Image (cartoon, rainbow over all chains, first blue to last red; front, side, top):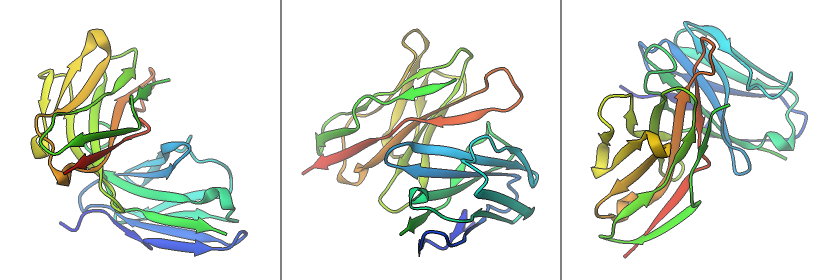
Length: 114
Length: 116
């Protein structure tokens, strides 16, 4: 299995631009998680999908952030407009059936907003 | 709310020495506990997890952790460090606060360096 795939691996953009991060979970996993990692705040859960439905989005920082999962093999995290404080590493993870199962992480997308 | 405290943001050991990374959690209900490792420029990889079976949990790469309810601790150990163990280690607790949703809460991480 290829594991969780994220693209791009690195993204540099200017403040105000739209950013879209992409994730392909492990085939057969029905839960998907987006995390953000920063030096100041560590790893934070942004949103959790189960069977393509958002279950917990309490970690999404503000309306500039949105996430979708149109099908079981693809999810996007969008930031519009982006701000310098959004600079972080964004991880996608998937698990077989939900929170209590082991989460498998992708390699992350390092986002820099200038 | 659940929290995880990792004592020591940076631990340095010599190759062959004991590795001890500390983790304390706060949870009012029996938790699931995890240790993840993150190598540079990579995602997190599960080392081991505790799910209320044996209190001593063995993981990959020779690591193990012991769940001590009385101390609310889940420290990670390895008898003999190897250069390849140099990485950042994250302790995490999964529990719910009474609702139907569980949440995985991570500690701030401990960077382990191994000196030759």
